[in-house]
Length: 370
View 1 (cartoon, rainbow, N blue to C red):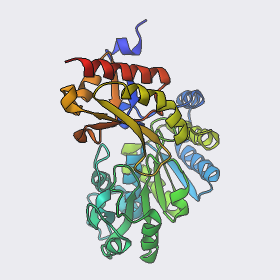
View 2 (tube, helix red, strand yellow; view 1 turned 90 degrees about the vertical axis):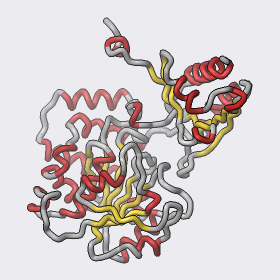
View 3 (cartoon, rainbow, N blue to C red; view 1 turned 90 degrees about the horizontal axis):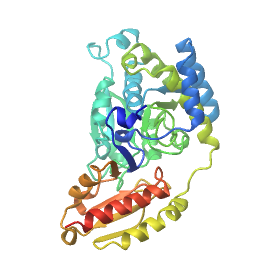
View 4 (cartoon, rainbow, N blue to C red; view 1 turned 30 degrees about the vertical axis):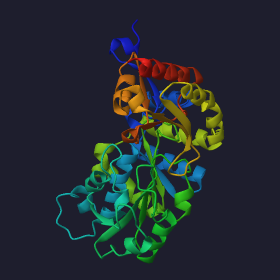
């Protein structure tokens, strides 16, 4: 019987780019896969399942309430819709067509209005909101954020991500203080973040996580926060959330994945350094290549290998090198945010030691070919 790769003519992938949606994000533990399989083969009263698994997750995390959604992007859209609609039954059913005058503006630091694979602004628009940018591309203070608040403001949105501008930006706690001063909800998108309670404890009213990234669950999302706001998010199951519904298997899989995540021993940045050191040494032995350890720009305890290509000596630019590495029998993916500078990063969290050897061998062969 042919393998999945043979059946669909797919390439195998070595994922040195991190937990990225374009590569399927992560690989859940066997226990989570078993829970997903169980869920697929059972029937549930879905509203009851949604509410009770949310309560269970909330108890695990020590927060007011929670809800499993289909993904973090859906979490943004449904959270925005929740703070606009609240419990208005007419708006719930006519969010985009209603001319009812309710606050719809979502204030966001300009440097947070990013494209994470799709624009943040698109998710806000799906939720019936209108983005209002505060500050500048390279700066946003609490004062600049507050200056954009008007009677038409429905919420403040903060994007905690490596995609966002990091320098000269107010903190989540700063944004929470502004939200509290104006009696507004603060929504924090923390899709790839590893601490599931930090931003809630800083004062955020709704916090959104990807279920498949740090938590390593199935494709899903988690929204946690204050009880009233989660109740309004839950109502969106009869509004825009209907088009974003998560299946029973995703709900059960993520709930168990969170439980396991809270007790699992996590790989530290220093352990990542130890894992990648032979790989870095191997790369530094290749003419035209230099490599070193770098740390996550968003402040997470994640170490990566930064690889610099001497494009003149190699005779190929970094974009060409990346393209060629993706075209072999096994496609190799890196983090390419600095490819225009001749640099890429290898995230080793999802890469085994033998796979690191495969990567260094592929780079050696490619750069030595003239």
